[in-house]
Length: 154
Length: 154
DNA sequence: TAGCGTGGTTTTAGTTTGAAACCATGATTC
DNA sequence: GAATCATGGTTTCAAACTAAAACCACGCTA
Image (cartoon, rainbow over all chains, first blue to last red; front, side, top):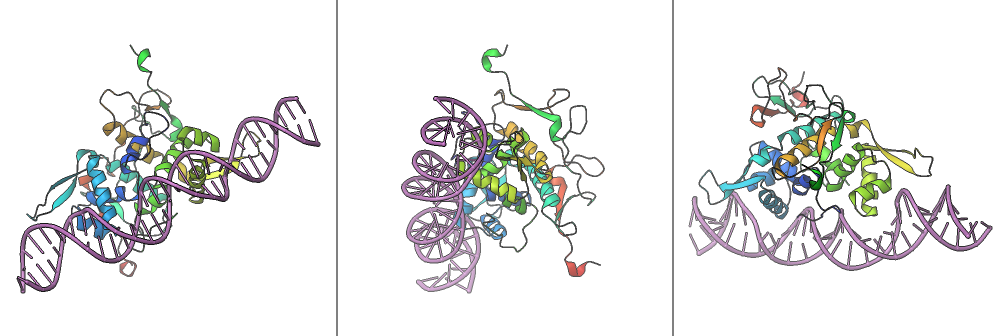
């Protein structure tokens, strides 16, 4: 992996993560991991991808610290793949992806799975970006600022 | 594109979007579009990718309704690529990706660009998933529910 | 000891990628 | 008005990646 380094020396905060999860399958594996899947065979059956690809993706996710391998909980000779802290940190991203998908990839009345609050069984709220003072922010209300180069900091 | 169809007939709410933006470059192009880039040459210079690839990616993003082409605003003979509503809907996802990247891909004191509120210049809040009643939800506090099949609905 | 389930790796062919070269169009210079 | 240049692509071709299938290793079971 780590196939392409940007023409700029240091990759930005968006590009770096994409090196870890920037392919089709990795995020689906992570989603399945959130759904409780742990075993090689479970992932393969759920996703229907070739075993060599799954193998490579799992290896990559483990190498990036998104999954961790632990001995199989059933005492079997195999291992299980579980989300690390870093992997769990992907939850908002998956929710964002799902909400975008629901908004734009389904017909208005097309049924689709829904993410609900386990306690109340009600759908979750939409993700919202807010300012420190709580105002909701649209894309246009934000700017990217670059840190001052080292020789200008005090 | 649309290279792989899941073994299940209908792709889920996470998989469908990945068909549109599930490759390394597409999201970076969209991010640059949020940053105001519009021209082929601007994207190429910013991302440093081969022209044929950029060409293919832009075509794909337009085909998926994420970008739209409009006549060049400077009256030149070329076109510009601008985000559609659907494309703008990707903003939360980009923010989620960025925040995850900041959390796990930078050393504690490593400087990196920051997303700030244009009005106050303060960093934005973290994205948070909340229940209808406002409680904050972690991954474990949520469940996926599948809609009842058509023949069970009333 | 012959099979079977799980979890992979290897092989091989097909697809995608990316760098460079090439092309088309309109504006600019001479 | 012919040559040059800038922009925005397409074409070509080698290298890298992906995917399906075959194969392998290990432990268990009959």
